[in-house]
Length: 116
Image (cartoon, rainbow, N blue to C red; front, side, top):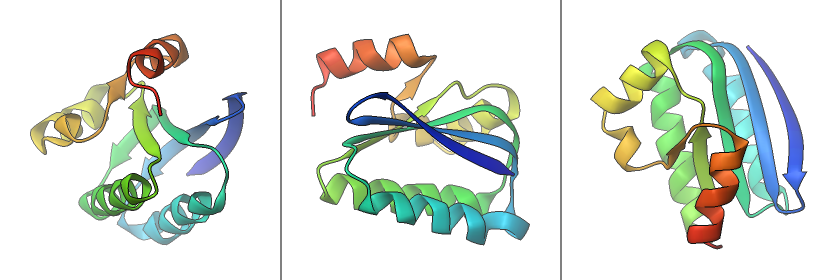
């Protein structure tokens, strides 16, 4: 799993995640996510376009992370989930908890309608 960060606007951080998010590397995933709580950005978008697998342990971490972000009046959303990852989010009803968006332009439009 590889993780990189980039800002598309001052308060919007895109987190590009590549590879597999599974039980064997969940600690790195968790540590990275919760380290982001210290950042100033109000919107965090997890780009899952290049994820080929996500296990149940990392999904639990995502739910806990979203609760923390919500308590800080910050937003976390999912970008570009597809294939088995999208299916996993849908089956587990996470698509009802996280805004599921297709691309950065859709994210910016969503934020216009749902400002922080």
